[in-house]
Image (cartoon, rainbow, N blue to C red; front, side, top):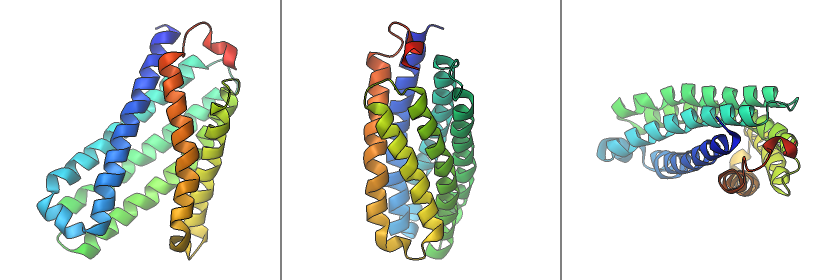
Amino acid sequence: MNQRTLSLIAGISYLIIFVTAIYANFFVLDALLSNPVTMVEQHGMSVRLGILAFLIAAVFDVIVAWVLYELYENHPLTRISTYFRIMHATIMGIAVFALVPTLTLSTSESILAQVTAFNTMWLIGLFFFGVHLILLGRIIKNIKIIPLFLVLAGIMYIVDTSAHFLMPNYAAYAGIFLMMVAVPSIVGEMALAIWLLIKGGKGNTQNVL
């Protein structure tokens, strides 16, 4: 498989991850946190679709990890970077198990307990994902400004996860941490996806090492 094809696969996979993760997180998970019983009893199909969306995102996360490994296999940091991304995808897949029981629960407390368990596992996965982004920023360091945003996003993921566990009053600063993570992450990863779709694999991709 040539590098152009691999780049297109990665770019399309990134877009699928964006769509599924945004839907599952902001349209389903947030709704479960706000109105747990109503979501389960009246919008059960939305919850099921959210669970499926998280699983799809995890699958395509592995595909992106594989493609990036194939594209940059000559870089000394590529293998360890791939491992960290696969760790994130694996933890995400496991975390989804916590959401499945919500479909049969009938009290806010029990539903929220499962959602909390999912979020805790996901946070741990995002810590490893942050390490992956930092390494990826080093691997593609010559693609203009994109690596800077990836490294910054990686650092913010690690800081945010650490803050969740270290700060008893994290909730008071949750909005600030969300912006610190979201801005560099969305800019960096979306820019990388667009670069892969438009320029990736044209010429010698290995020259960006």
